[in-house]
Length: 504
Ligand code: AHR
Image (cartoon, helix red, strand yellow):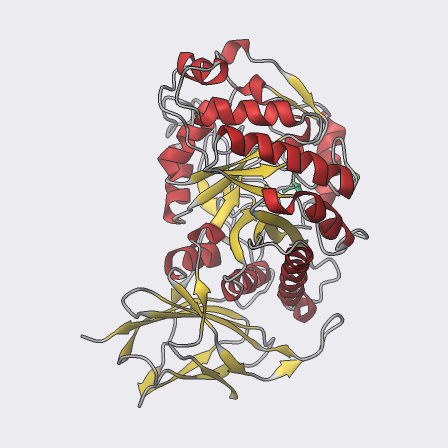
């Protein structure tokens, strides 16, 4: 069997993990909201029309944060359309997704959904077709206690207590030519700065995310961050990163190495933030919000067909990627990349949550099921809390199209306040199991509580409504700890969660 070693030391601390890195995203697109989280008439629907079975699946993820309402959608969205009596809300053409938005689900309903799901609302404002005025008004509507036009309107609309939203995105992907009212980096930096000033004057307790690049392949990547941060650095708290990967050429080893690109992307954006900090002699650091990340490529052709059938329709089946087992492995590696960068990445959102490039799928009038990628997200969110430890890994390597020396074993480790340790590991080897030997001698006596394994013999295996348990975690074979060293075999192509607890 191939061998790899890992040294963990309780003193090799990367950072405390901000639980918000296990967030997700719901946009008004496709069947994410309508016929996803919201389906009045469904047997499990609550008084607002939200499906109870979906909420249960979200709760099982212990999801701390949900970004909303877009995405590209937000750049043409009038937030005022989404408040007040439902029957009076306007229907609008959504130019981002060529569908009709009825505003049947609006701010109040969605905020209540978040409360029920136990997740904080991260709200994106429109810096495409709107600007500073709408931005300050929505903060007043959401967070000001009472006694002003917008806060009193909130109260009249049935919500006495402020929503207390603490995290706002200053627009979405404003570097992308596909964005409604796309801006130059300089223009965006100026409008982000002015919106940020006004929003924080209304509520100084809020935190703000400026739009970074839509992905690391954008021609403007780097220059965009430098230029826009030069304008707004002192007024924002985070810069966003977005990234999706695909495997259109069916190159599994290359695909599984894409998380290394995510790691490079994070380091480059952190360096740019620090360069601007240096240039400005600033005392504050701007951290990162990786607020869209996932695998996304399976559904792209189907979307074109859907639009041909029903341009300006509602609840179209858009962006409905059916995820396979290899996608779950890459999602596992992307989660570990976030954990290992916990010193800079404080927020992250798997894009998205329900039906649209999502871990959770629904069928109207019928059931809900977990896609393959649901499982690593759930494991990381539940067990990846506390402190991120720096794993020193010595692993066999392989070369692929974009990267040389890709480690076969990709790993991250966390320690909770009681000293319990969780190791996450993907074995990227296509054929061979690898025996991982972990030096744990710096910890109190640990014993192996659980080894969770996600594996399927077919990398293209998927879960469906009628076969929801095809790819599902099972108990792994575990390993032995002898004199503080754990020996554990990791199956070829597998996601592993190794839970070690303090004895006694
Ligand atoms: O998540 C789907 C889309 O991907 C979002 O609307 C946009 O921000 C990104 O391009």
